[in-house]
Length: 285
Image (cartoon, one colour):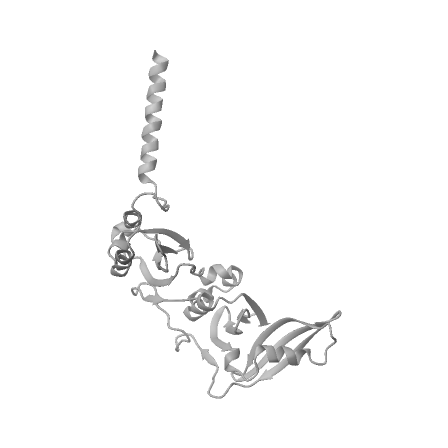
C-alpha cells in the first residue's frame, strides 16, 4: 500500500512538471492546427498592433505563418494566405521580449509566394566577415549582398595592413562591390556593373581567349578599378597545363560613372537603419 502511494505521488509530480513545461513552451505553428492568426498574435504580439500586417490578414482571411533565419539577432516572419496564394507578407523581426512593449518590427515586404528572403550578409560569407568585422557595419554592402546575391568573393592583400575584398555576382549581369580596407577599417567602397562599361563580360572573355589554343578556357574573371577611373577585366585563362592572367581594358559607357563612397559620405543604395521604424516594399523576382 505504501509503495502504491509513493508511485501515485511520483506520477502526480511528473504530470505537474509536464503541464508546466507545456505552458511555458513556444507554440510551433503548423498549417491546420488551431487559429493561425491568434497563434501568430500570441507568439508575436507586435504583429497584432501593426496596421500593415493586420490589414494583410484581413484582406486574405485564413493564413498560416512560419519563421525564417536572417541573422543572430533578427528573424523573418512569413505570413502566407492559406488559400489561392499569390503574394505573401514577410517582416523582419528583432529577437526581443515583445510582451514588454518593445518594438521589434523593422521592415515589411510583400513578395511572391514562391520567393524566400535572403540570409544576412554575414551569414552568406561568414569567413570574410569574421576576418574584417568592419564589413558588418557597411549598410551599402549588406544591401548589395542581400539584393543582388553575389555568389563569391575574392580577397587581395597589398600589404599586411591593406586589403581589397571583391564581392562578385557573375551569375547574370556581372556586378561587383569592392571594399578597400586599411588596418581593418573601411577606407572606401566601389560598385561597378558591366552595364556601365563599353566592354562587357562576354566580349572581354572572347578577347582573352583569342589567340589561345583551342582547348583554352576561362577559370576566373574579376573587374579591377585602378585610380578611380581605369577599369580592367582581369581574366585567368588555362590552356593545357599553363595558366595566364589576361587584362582586357574597358571604358565607361557614355553618361556612366563609377560609384565610389567613403564612410559617412553618401551611399549607393537607400538603406533603412535599425530602430527607425519599418518600410513596406513590394518585390518581385
